[in-house]
Image 1 (cartoon, rainbow, N blue to C red):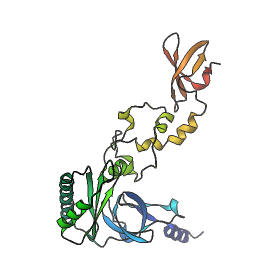
Image 2 (tube, rainbow, N blue to C red; image 1 turned 180 degrees about the vertical axis):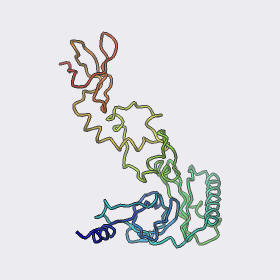
Image 3 (cartoon, rainbow, N blue to C red; image 1 turned 90 degrees about the vertical axis):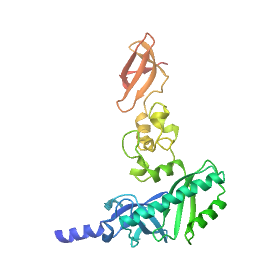
Length: 280
């Protein structure tokens, strides 16, 4: 067996990838060896759906050999390299534009909150992200922003959701870790109250709501497993018989395989689900 050939073949098949945020979407992108020094927050140009897009790096480079058959967008370059001083100046300019936009929105009595401003690498455009309860007519505001910039920079205003806001600004969840949408670089399609009920969790807004004000993303990660494990468990509220005593199911612990029963004579009992019998 030629180990050198095997090693070379493995190296050839190995892909180095990185997470890149384009506006409010996160993409896994392939990079060449010269981009392995990219770090979180760097701005890059990538090829996406046949077009060039500007993005912001959202992770460190990582191996993705388990995605060999998948075609990724790829990083074209980061030739518009910014020194630390240039980054500070750019961020100051973005902050200044945010402040100006907030003031002008108040002037026009527009019910909108500006979240973030991002320049393209070559400063050919700037994207301003905002949240609002309804659609906003910001045509006059855009005219003011163009006059304020006094350049040919294209101005784009993007209305985003509460979850997308969390992706942009980040934060710490009640678990003490960085919020999932930011750390894992993905937002679930939907998170419904059904996921809470299927996992037999207490419907307490303080415990099931994320910093975005919506149901926590992590509720979806184990939902299907809970649905499968719940099969065979009696429903809460069902009357059961235990050792000739009658009781009512108060709660179920899916992971332990137990149910808590409130006995009519008083008190509660936690038993394995196979030890109880439903009342006919």
